[in-house]
Image (tube, rainbow, N blue to C red; front, top):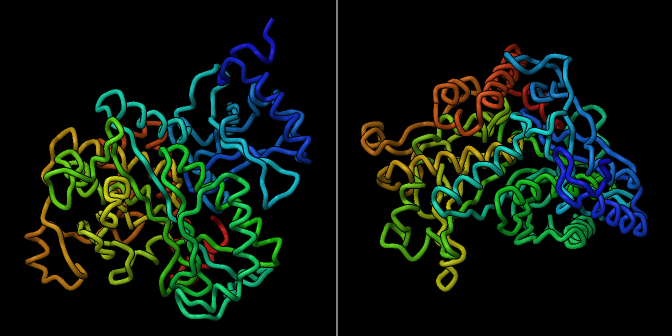
Length: 467
């Protein structure tokens, strides 16, 4: 007879006992329910919740949810692939007990990311968290490489509620200005306190450039944990804002014009505790493998954009000369290049050196974005791809002949262009697997078709409150 302590499909030995103890601990803290969260192909965080007393059952048997959500669009309409999008079938959501946390911004609730498992106990091929874990494992087994990752989170804070869909900035101060910090001092302090209570390491928190915009950077973690934290931080930002009568938008473009919200990815590759982006004989201290890795990212960048900038609104943000990184180029601390090489301050380079991918926003499923970034880099490392010349300054100002000679190309200017590049990229499709890759193509084309008759202002409005 199977008990909650026995290994079960999707669970781990002892998960039932752990979950029982955890639910008792949470109940003692006044937690009544647990949010089970994952991110779908369109970049929307979808959830189910269970009473705290049912956490052990969820850990042992999972919680049902239809696989149709793999082909949901951001507007909740549904597209199909050969295997996904029908009303048939079921999946089980299994909470990762190592990541369960009481939500300081939502008293009475806890949160956990989930892995999606079939009813037969196999990993669901459309589960992006599973796919990211798989590529991280393969990198360790085949190359002896581990990764540290971080995701920057930018958002715009408005006065709420926004029943009419408009956005009114909650602050009036200038970009990076002390006035903004003062204006939302109470909100900011409560947000930092909530992150600390949830065990989230915040490296920086500051007012940003656009109207009402702020940014949080979190500490580097393994890629799966970094993606989990990105989802959790956004849940926390929104919850704390609501308690202050504020609303937040993580949309790539809150308005059709101006600077939007980014979600830059930082990644470093490590072997035996040594950072491959520092202490080498290559450019700016990179090892040969780090240079090859960066070259692979550049080579796949057009296709990768379908994963990192997956919304029609993403292309309102991806404009030249706005620090969005819309050219396939790299440079040391060059914020107009798609790949910025961060060397870190003298004395910290062995720990801080990394690459930053800039054409990324928070419409992206963070598990998919990191999977694509790692897959692209590993292809470059495996193939020993040569790293092209770096750029300085704004690549938009390069004469066309010089840009062509340097291999500097404009990234896709529309979602349909990006998804066509992804569809033709065998390496990135293979990294995701056929089921998930087909879902990406279908959902991206579906998003593009859904706004075909809208102008830029209408596109911005359509996605303003989705992510």
